[in-house]
Length: 394
Image (cartoon, rainbow, N blue to C red; front, side):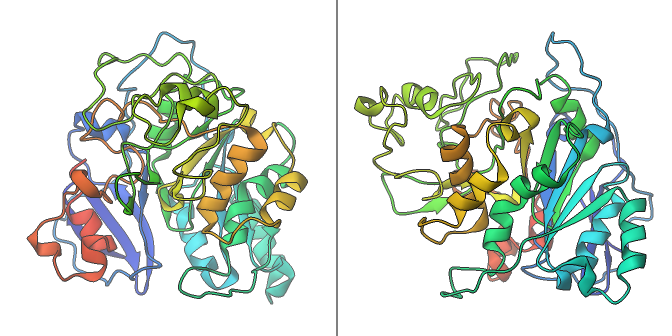
């Protein structure tokens, strides 16, 4: 293992050619540090080069108090109550294994393109999986027809949470953490934020949503105008102070399309004449997946209550049906919308604080961008891993 340059309060640890982990650099926590739950490392876009450590101080994970505690009984969540779901492939297995650095004690579903028997040392790998609380399930690649718009693993990414739920032991988890194989979760902060939410309430939690706006043809993430709810019973010292330009999120118990339609007073996505329908037709966006969906790289959290609303077989039939080919995270969101009747819920804390992005804070867009002159002319315009981390002030 070699250490890479420290940027702000983040330290990137890497090996030659593949990203290993991200950890908090030890500094006094600030207000927004308490809210971070994911960072998307985007190692598939551009591998980090190995650099010298610029600051010799040690790095470690830090536990934080709930920044917005509510008077709700604690459920005393532990790492054993979580299930990390990683859609991956055999040729990226090393990357999935590297995430064990932050997944210690957390059960994990590896949803891969090929069966474990394809490995020469399958028996040894199975022992390794057992030691790390991992199980392996298979969803094969689907042939690509348009390489510019499709990936062979899109269907696997869309199916991964549903297949993991089917494969896991009954009642073995309360929350699913779903992301790419290069999505890094800050588990202690995740536990803090989930501890006072009801895992039996249907939740799809994310504050990093793609959306194409009516007024333009530009789709971006995270888009603060994208419709979403707040958690059931959520309270906040800033309650009611909706940031300018943000969707006025209603409380969702659970978050349904009808709830969002009634709250969409500016007709961001709905026509109010449709709100009385069971599934209001979204005029601008026919349904989630058509430029309104959770960003998979930033991660999303699903409750046990959400996953109990349908079966893997129904989701598989829907995803493999006549729906247009889309990205995995778009097809996943579309499935949750239609098969479970559930729309996204914002975790809450960052909703009232525009400077805080809880899920993947480094990658900002539109009016919330933090890119500087040093990002001009760089890979992905500063959204490469080093560019993201460099400007991540949180």
